[in-house]
Image 1 (cartoon, rainbow, N blue to C red):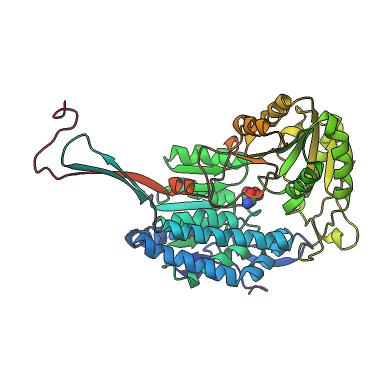
Image 2: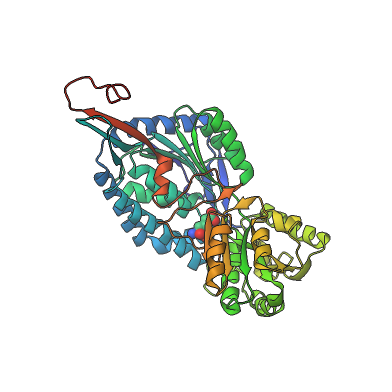
Length: 496
Ligand code: UN1
């Protein structure tokens, strides 16, 4: 018997024990307490889930899309009813502060409403035929069974970005949530179930990436893999799934910069830097981990920024007075600290932070002091590699052109931001920043769900989550010609 009600797999509409009989612990990063256990599944559990998904999809694809959308509308309503409770769960198992957790649940609600509307669109195209009495059109059809692999940093928002468009488009889903956030995943599944989603359309298999995730890449019953996580894992997924001719959509790392030009509103820029660098303890793929500032404004910016960083309250995210919660686990803490040591060795100036926090109750959790480096050169590893923690690198540049070059001079390309009042530079930056998302006079975080989300270079592989673009991942184009002439018309022959 378990001390907790375990997070079981959800297959074919039923909660099921893993065939392995094994479970993993779910730990609260704020205090190290075990919150529950999750099914540590094996390939056999995945097989069952894929079988259930294939069966269910055969019927689900025939349900009219506006009817499918009704389930999504109920998902939105139920999430709204449970917003506070799910947000608390989310904060307890992944650490982000409660205000942000509520924002994240809101992101899933917004996505459910938006994608419910898509049930009445799912637009195709009609195109004139080159022959008389012939009609040509292309329609979106579901791909089949979609495999979804989601991270712990946005356990419900990212799951919503992927599952809702997949489902409204007529696919069935097999979802492997992150090991760190099973309770949030379970709550989302309960919502789908209560909303009346037919059994088997959404299946969940908890487990380790190298076991369940890996098996998904090879499973012949899965047609598409949609993944958000690290670039290293994404590269592995792309090569394995590519060899099996699966479509793969990848959202990976970031090394996002906020550029502050000398004419910027510095107070506004500081507000944005704080929010984008230290929100979610820097554990967002959109987090700002670099500030590129025109040299003449550097001193004034740092003078405003440092006291604000030092005033951030670090602690358990359930306390509404806390600004920055813990990081996800001990290994993350160790990685962040290694990068900070490396930054010092590379010759960057550590202005504040740079250590684990262990005062009083913080000793039981995984807390890192909000950190600022100045004097960072663009070629340093701390300026190039994703740290995924509350560490900011400030770099001075001598011109707008150099700022753009430094922004673009990393292997990632998710989000970029620029603060300036010069409209000409706004449009030049919009054109020349090479990321998938550009913000003007706002931080690098806070994407809205009805616009495409994704990045260039090592951040993505050309696909987008969110917005209508998400449908491109989960549908195929089917081209249909209807010849109503009553005779054989030969394209390219009879009309020349
Ligand atoms: C992520 O970190 O993977 O734009 C997603 C944002 C959020 C989503 C972040 N809406 O910061």
